[in-house]
Image (cartoon, rainbow, N blue to C red):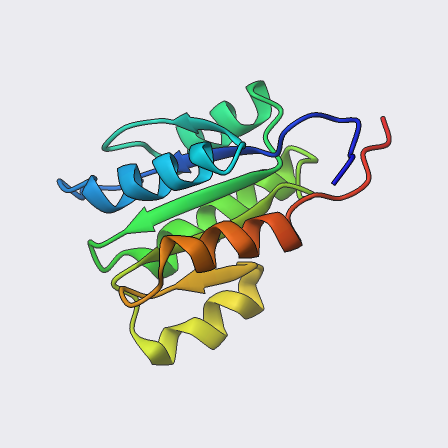
Length: 138
């Protein structure tokens, strides 16, 4: 506590063709209730749109909710774009229906953490609180 930089800012996004955002909204609300600033981008965002939003909003993290099965591609693309735009300090985490065997691969690519359907909002809020904020030097 006591970080002068204000609340942790998180962009919550649903990239790709998913039609369901209940889970993303639940997470967004939980993070907001925990005192974070949440920018929810809505459905059908491209990785480019998600990264643009995160950079414009000066976000500390991006939370991706992916149920479509395209998690390997979407996470990799978001991380790639952040690197290209010198914003690799924005942590990427996510959740959704992600097969257990894909998790190590995604973490290797740079995804900070993944939450599968059994994860509680409390777990996610605590993870963000413990892992997202770096000292902010301009």
